[in-house]
Length: 334
View 1: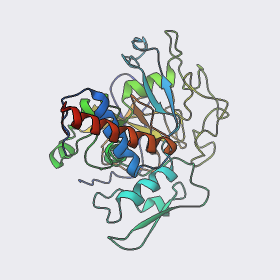
View 2: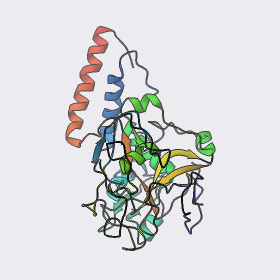
View 3: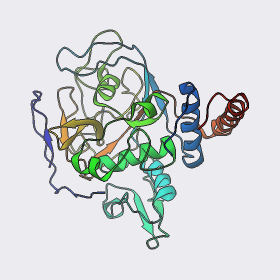
View 4: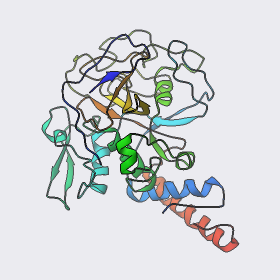
């Protein structure tokens, strides 16, 4: 299913395919959140040797859009400059899905002309590759839970713990929200609806635009929507049409999951896709969190920059030094 929330959008969007219903060391410290942040980032570095470009969204404490009750965010944060790409998701699969216990791979990623990841081998030794020409295109055929596991992996190196503590009951009941300790320590999340909306439409000066291109009008020269191209394009392809903060493709290309729970059983979607519209600030979508479609992807957010691979060694070194000093002075234990 694919539908809009009742907060009054002008149109309704439906996807033609049916939902794919797949179900799928606690850390303690007496010291400041600095150590926890270092632990999260260092563990992430061991497994997440990928680049995630982000932009900083400042202007903390802005109010909601007067036209729609969204966009107010009390803190500064970092959000993905682009949608998560096939290359980034393939690195994730190769690190976590040799057996693919959680069905992180969808066979349509290979068979669809709009998707770009192939799988080889058998269970226990699966390997994944990017289809030629698809590395910088947005990953699609990912459920909300796939996206949550990707962000957990970036946070902790583990798919089941991080900003989202995933349990069978929480997944089945669709009740999982952000773990504040992990988030406040610099963990990585699926962008919240307000984070996503602000990054897309806010102008930094108290007003919001109708479209995520700093404009109240849009054409197919500005974004990939309405089947003007007929398939996904490279992220950032519309280089002349960023949002105020410097994000790209928050309008068109693929709808993007956000972590808002809607109608009890749904999760939020924003932005429209290559095959429809839904780019306007009033357009608010949702779908079952298990749904995987060719028009849906996601982008990430964090309170801290997601470090470049060149920074990982330094983070690990700082972590080791911090742990050594703590043990020596008896201030705390992990």
